[in-house]
Image (cartoon, rainbow, N blue to C red; front, side, top):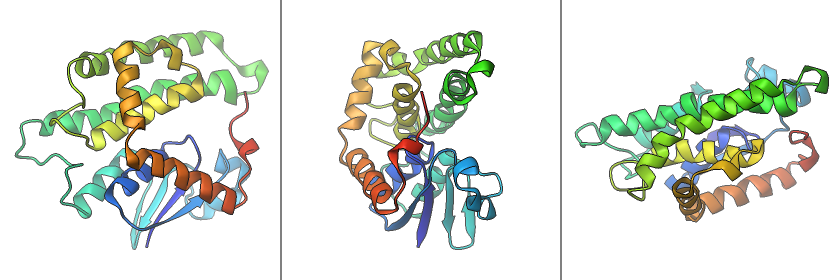
Length: 220
């Protein structure tokens, strides 16, 4: 059984979305955020205390974009993946990692210094600087989706899932109102996919069934 440890609004949503798109069976274990604080027993499973944590038999993984790539390569063939002999293979790999390393990273800084740290340690300068950093790098997405429906290969792939999560995160950290119109339209298209809706339902049902209160999500 594939097992995913997940928090609502966390990077693990990339993996959940991919699992739903592939139609795979999985066990979804919900945790309060951050689990290293609110679910200390999780450290026995993942000493880093980070989300996601994914297992497939003896395979254990903690990087969301890598897990998505693992799933499409291991459980394909699927049009979610772009093969090495396709023209957009390089762009596909670049977008997968761009979603995490370039777009999600600055948002985590915004999140930390606007909402996670105690009020006396919050840094408005860091929040504003990294918000601008994120929006500057988002231009790369805007340049593409203003001209076509998906990021690469003329179809929906895990590259869209990787970048899509970073757009979901903008709503959580308070940047969504600054999305360019073409990016906002792209994000609406991604939210309209059946797999996205199923993933949102799956996490809410699992949260309720496992007794994870909504109030454990990040405070304002």
